[in-house]
Structures are given as C-alpha cells and as structure tokens.
Length: 478
Ligand code: IMP
Image 1: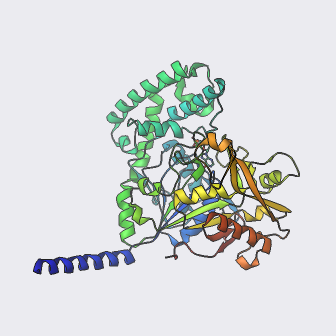
Image 2: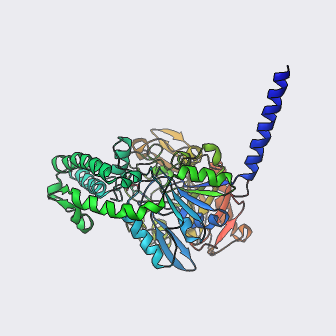
Image 3: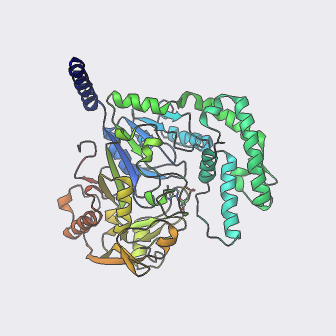
C-alpha cells in the first residue's frame, strides 16, 4: 500500500515537472506548401520569424527557391533558411536536407555582399548527405535519357537532388561529417565514382552529352574526375567546419530553453515522394511529419502546422495538373494568373503552369499534413477576374470523388468538377484587414475553408512582408 502511495506521489511529481517543462519550453510551428511548391512560403516564414528564435530546413536541397521582398529589395534563397534575413535569428539545416557545399558558399557570398551575417548564425547537421558534381551530372543525363527513350521527363531542376537521395537510401552517401576525415572521404568518393561513372558512361551514354560550363571542369569523356571533386570538397571542408553541428541536440536544447522554432518546408505536398503525383515528384518527403525526422526532433515538439496555399494553382515541371488552364493565350484567366502573378520559377526561370484553385487536392494536403490552419497567398492576383472556378472534386472512371487520388496515373484521368463564384473588381493589394476585402473575395476564401475543412488563419495580399491579414497567430494559437 505504502509503495503504491509513493508511486502515485512520484508520478504526480513527474507530471507536474513535465507540465512545468511544457509551459516553459518554446512553441514550434511547421510551414509547408500544400500544392506543387511556389506557394509563397518564403515571405510567410520570414514574417513568422518575428516570433521565432530559430528557423530550420528539414528536407530538399537547393532545388527550392524562395523570393523575399524586404523594403522593396528582392532576395532569392535556395538552401539557407529564410530566417537568415532577420538579424539574430539562428538558422539550422537538418539531416533531412541534401547539401551542396558549392551552392551553399555561393549563397553565403551573395548574402554577405548585401551585409547579411550568415556564418555565425548557421548550423549544419553533420548527418546531411552531400550533393557533389556527379549527382548533377546523373540528374541531367537521366533526364536526357528519358527523353531520348520516349519517356516524359520528370522536369527536375537538374541540381542532383534525386541522385543524392538515392545514395542516402542506398547507404553509400558521403555526408557532411565525412569531410572532417580526408582519407575516409577519399576512399568513399573513389567507390562512389566507380559506380556512378559506370552508370554515366555505359548506361546513360554520357560521353556524347554536353554537361554545360558548371560541370565541365569536373568531367572528361563523360566521366567525373576524382581530383577536381576531391580538391573542391576539401576546400569546402575547411569553410564548413565551424558551422557543422549536432542539429538535433541543439534544437532540443533550444526548445527546452524556451526558444520558439520555425520548421520551413520546401517544395510542396504534391511533390512529396510518397503522397505527391508520383513519379512526377521530388525525392524527399515534403509533408509536415518529416520536420520531425528531417531535423531530429520528436513529433510532440511540432505544435502547429501552417499550410501555405496559393489562391490558384501552379506547377513547374511535368506531371498531371487537373485544373490546368491555357496560360499562354492572351486574354484568358490562365494568362492573367501567369502574367499578373509573375509565375516564373525562382530556381530555373521556367514558366509555371497555371490553373484554378483545387479544393479536392487541398483536402488531400490537409489530411497528410494535419494542417492547423491555412495561409492563402497571392489573393490579389485574382483581382479583376469576372468569375472564378473552384474545383470541388473530380469524375474518375465514371465515379465522383472529392479528394485527389494517389499517383500520377489515376490523377491523369481526373476530370475536374467546378463550382462558379463571382470575382471582384477592386484591388486587394496591400489589404491588411479581413473586413476590408471585397465581399466576393471573402466569399471565395470562406468557400475554400468550407470545402477543405481547414480554417484560414492568414491571407497574403502582396509580396511585401507587411501586406498580410492575420486572423490567428500560429505562435499564439493553443
Ligand atoms: P527535383 O526536386 O529537382 O528532382 O525536381 C523534381 C520535381 O520537383 C520537378 O517537377 C521540379 O520542377 C519540382 N520542384 C523541385 N523543387 C521545387 C520548388 O522549390 N518549387 C516548385 N517545384 C519544385
């Protein structure tokens, strides 16, 4: 009996202690794209960073492209978390990111040129797999081979992302921590090159392929050369050393010390390797749950998931897009979205395909991410369209479905079912109060929330940091 009482008091004490820790520890928000990327996450991450002390990237690599406009000055980031633009905020690159040291230092140089201090604020996980020149060579040669063989290209960014993740999953990747040991690095690199050069020359016919000026210094007769890759990596190793870290440990400690963290997703849910329009996807998990595995924190540390959602849809690269419009013909709604929305890729400069808002797609996204709230971006781009079509579901093989099916083959056969809503003529650019939006714009937003079952907590009405309507602050919502 006595031991029972003691145990009860003990567990009460433990409960009180953990309750105390919960209230003193920080609050953490995950930001994900809910469509095919390019939803405008960069601006929102930057905006939310006002409430955060640390910003974390947990997947993807320099295939991402975030444009930030601060005081009218445009900055494009690919690899470094958007929080870097806020002085004093710590930035972390988690183990789930594939890291190109060459691109990292290019980006650091660009930021330092405009006076942004990067090196003292950036922490990079030692467990990040490296992207090296042969990954980009494989990416480009594979895309060319697909085309040559009559297959549709994936439309990758050509940055080596897929091949780098393949090496990781095959347990042969060179990781950031290998850079600390030159002999170990050299031995692993030799093995990797033996494999990849065989694939490049014998399978992909790389001897006849033009890899362009960036890769030329690393290649001879279609093969990637050991010496230049090794020399460049060793030069980067010295520069990287002060930023290498046990990011998982640092994040857990920062959280316990009361820091608010922001987990910044790259790409978008429909590009997720499992949940997206497979095989027309990127090679990582872009969903919110991966913030945990890709940064080394427990899922209980993720308190709120914000889904960044464009007021219409866009996608770059190939793959199905049920609500796609003709976006090249002047005078059409698609052309309006493409031109008014300036829909060009930040990373590759490619035009983005444009189409109507797809609520059935968003329903899928809401489920796989466990969205707490939506932030609708680029609402202002729809200003001036007489009518808006909203996709509420699809006809698939003669049956109606209200949610996006799994994988490209089924999605390809989906015929969208639309609902028509009135547009608005007034400008919404720069509006910061929900009530100040035209009634038709409010109706559009409310219908989106209704169809997807996710409340709208924020609306962005221009690329400017301050042009944001806030209904509920993700850092306050409990
Ligand atoms: P990868 O990530 O370079 O392998 O490209 C795979 C697919 O993801 C292609 O359709 C790319 O266009 C797309 N993609 C990769 N990163 C982004 C991004 O940041 N925004 C939009 N699409 C992306």
